[in-house]
Image (cartoon, rainbow, N blue to C red):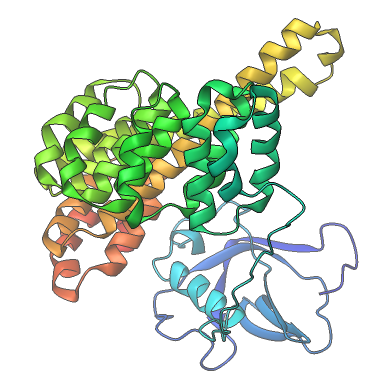
Amino acid sequence: MRIAKFRDVVADNRGLPLKPAAAGAFPGVDWSVPACAYSVDVSPLKDGATVLATAGDHPAIVSYTCGKGRVIAVLINPHGVPADGTRPYWEWSQWPRVLAACLGWVGAGFEAETGGMVKKVAVDPAKMTPERLFMEGFDLPGKQFTAMLREAMGNVVDAESARMLLEAAVDNVDKVEDTELLSEVAELASPYLGRDDAELGEKLTRSNLDFIRGAGYRCLGLAGDPKYRAVLEKGLAEDNPVVAREALLSLGRLGQRESAPAVEKILASPENRLLAAAVLLRIGRTDMLSDALAVYEQGLVRRIRLKSGKGAAIDNLYGGVSFKLTPAQRKRGLAELRKVERLERNAIDDIRVFNEAVLALPPADAGRTLDLLSQSTTREILPLAYALYNRLPAEAAQAVKPKLLAAQLTELRLLAE
């Protein structure tokens, strides 16, 4: 489209009926149920644009190609005052299918895969390697060991070198003069550790340093050996909630129902409650589904509050009067910002883990979940409800429809129409 003037819009509160304009553009959409827009942009279309749907006599959804790129423009918007007896398109049960068809056209060909390429990072022989540091670290004084540890981080190229670096750091922890460096080492090595590192993980959990123990709990979870369940359950009592979170995640990976009593205790604490609820579902405690969903709703609201809190912390540090901050105040502000950012990241990840646990439930439990979600007034549950409903077998979806038709949220009622 070409912008001809400011607010080039036609508005009609009596309704501009939506109709398909291109055959086959919206498969599966039932256009027999009328829906209307009340405001549509009428800017002139570019040459080559294809009208897929109209609102009254005006283009409402248009497509355009630019080389290999594809673009969909939706020219209608929710402005206007709908007249009685008309159905706004955003309250139309077919509207999600219209949007899905648009996304399907834009993303055509996404199934094609390109062959994976393994990028090998070459070891720099001029620098200290994790293997050499592991062998020679005992003979190095503290200051030199710290410098060599930092240098060896650049030569971590695979699981073996990551393991060697982490073991060298743990064995010589009293020589490291920079505790932040140890945290960086644990963070760098963790992604490389896997099923073969259970013994190393158990060794790390005995460290005096929080972040080293956290890496150890992660190792034990990735190893997947049930014999370390007691160690991970003990990790739930860690004073540092970040370390306890790693132990909780690892118990979820083990999937042992015997862990349920230890995990249930986390539900009564202020930290890691949503993650605990997800782990309980993952290990088979679907009898706690109602309590878990209540914690989920609280977690969704908490994530929004954390996002707002991060904005306030950023404004305090960099806003219009931030020049008045003393160095001490700025230092406290930066610490607060880092804390809020960490909490927000964890909250987002906890929601992802919970969603995955719910979407993996069998159809009977999935139907019960939708029944419980239909009683909610928290709009943030809608993405999970839509994803869950669309994964149900036809019979299970039909069985849950009466509950959804009586749902508190309009969007859930539309889902069942």
